[in-house]
Image (cartoon, helix red, strand yellow):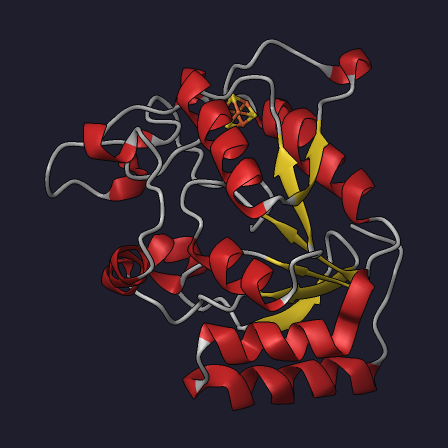
Length: 224
Ligand code: SF4
């Protein structure tokens, strides 16, 4: 947990804004975030899809975008990140695990901590707010994700502009805007993490069933 603590009035303001944005479009939420937090806003992109990235970077081309390179990604993910970086001329920050705490990519809880959580903690230090692509339909654990909240773990405001979107909304936006699709999605990888702990899912199977399939782990620690 971060040592940064929000005031009660800030928590009230965030809750009110979150409620107000329940029926807003992601573009409206992103515009508010950019106006409110300016260069103290960052976006940690999973690069599973680039819907929010497209919305955010069209609104703020210099927005900082973070990619958590766990050093265990699929080669297809790294190629996709590079394609997207070039397409948008991204202000991309790539994090890496600390070699001193770099266990073999294994699926154990300390693995995500060292490869994702700790690097993100370092990357967002000094920032006031971060955007994420979390959707309520992603997983049961995300079913009540607010649009705007205080992120106690990372010590800044967390903004989920796609929280109310469905997978169909995402697919529609991708098609309407001719966005590049992660090359593993057509191969059945509907939720994409690191190569050692991600498998494709069968038609009709829960998309996140392919993540940490050999354990009861369901989140990497960034969002729960
Ligand atoms: S997703 Fe799997 S391999 Fe990647 S950091 Fe987390 S536990 Fe390790």
